[in-house]
Image (cartoon, rainbow, N blue to C red):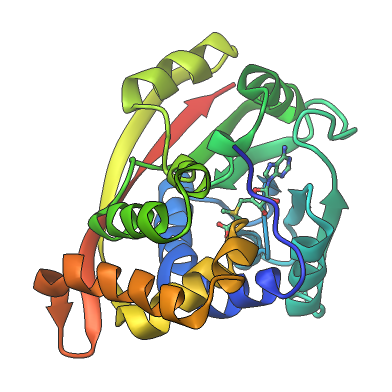
Length: 263
Ligand SMILES: C[S@@+](CC[C@H](N)C(=O)[O-])C[C@H]1O[C@@H](n2cnc3c(N)ncnc32)[C@H](O)[C@@H]1O
């Protein structure tokens, strides 16, 4: 399973998904890692840079922040949004960063880990680039939410089981125990996981589902459906979630596991 966006998807991701989802989780991740003024930070799988920008705010002008991602489109958006911020951007896979060892006080990553094809190698690389006593802080979905379950079921009915499998994979994440095991195996100590839950509010399905799917790797499969099939898919999501509608929004709980470990 992968997360690779192209065309207008990084733009939609930044304009829609960052304010509704990723920006809110970014604040909780950065609160957990407690960056200090002057620290050096590597943000891996930084996407359009929401966590990278907050990290730079937290470490201040004396701190050094690097955002790394494999996707050129996401990084182009990140660079544009942080044009006046002193942030270094690197286009690279997480396992071959080419960065010097012992060079960061913190490695952070939000919703990237479960996409890495070789997670043990990625964790070893994070350990290598961290300075002694540095920490890793990664935020990873705690499985599906009511909304993502409803969406995947509608995608299965109106697009295909194969496309639904890809979409479901976005939330097929390791358990808290598995995370602790994997991060410890990579050499980190005092590894802990904290589950964080937020009440997520998104626009009604008619507005939100096309925007959300437009920012996903399966965007083309949705966009090439005939209009009546698109409408039926959206109506199916609305119907499943009718108990979660509050005014003109869908409101539902969602959760992440934040794993922290020390070198
Ligand atoms: C769901 S996005 C999260 C982006 C950002 N951290 C955020 O919270 O908005 C996942 C990101 O992981 C990146 N990614 C996936 N596999 C990667 C890899 N092997 N190396 C580097 N980045 C990767 C994708 O390009 C994408 O930007």
